[in-house]
Length: 79
View 1 (cartoon, rainbow, N blue to C red):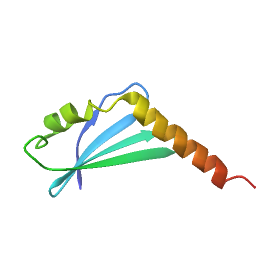
View 2: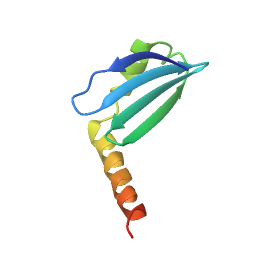
View 3: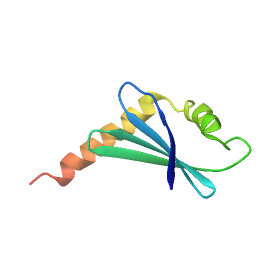
View 4: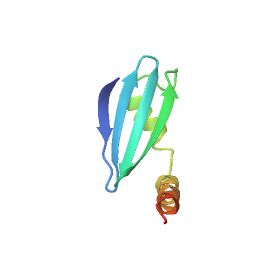
């Protein structure tokens, strides 16, 4: 797997990777990360086309998932 680029964002670190016939986007916020895998296709065939498809996802969804991850983490760490 090799890194093919980063996507600028004010609140997250977003990295893009290529592995065989898959593109992977990793979004990091604090101690948490989300990964999204996309098969190479006519629509997604380069870093630029990956970014174009990725921007369809709203930040509110990323935040919602990170908030849920944080809630789960707190439950796990309760004593």
